[in-house]
Length: 65
Image 1: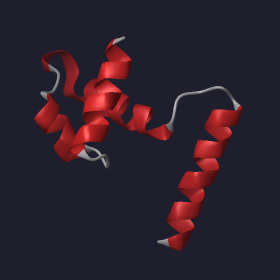
Image 2: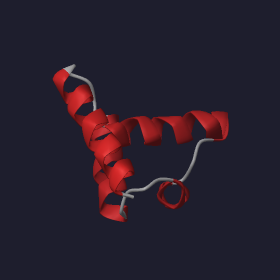
Image 3: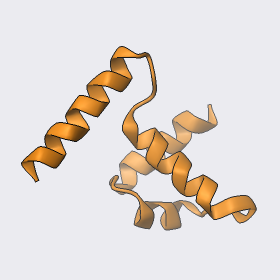
Image 4: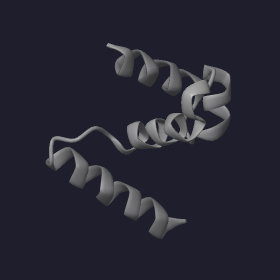
């Protein structure tokens, strides 16, 4: 688990240095793309990503803006 955490941290740092969105955005966007035209309801998205409910809600609000 420690290696996984380090990999995520390094990836997050690289994304930030490149001026790109956080890794969580890509996770959410991937799940939405996989869902296709029908999309996902927020509670379905929460079940599919590694974010807490409040994190998904905040992220969706930022993506919609």
